Length: 61
Image (cartoon, rainbow, N blue to C red; front, side, top):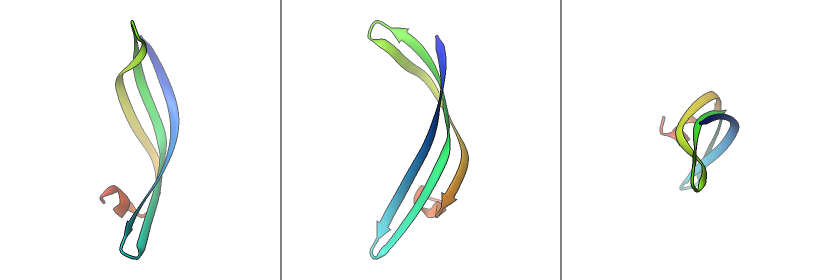
């Protein structure tokens, strides 16, 4: 077993009629990895969002 930590920035947008809504989130994934006969695979993934900017409507808020 191994653990990995990956940083992420995800930019998203939706377009409704003539309006464009955008947002971005940043954070980290903490993964628990297992070695299989086919290589390393993610057993468990934890997403930790550390910041968000823009319109929360894009994320359903």
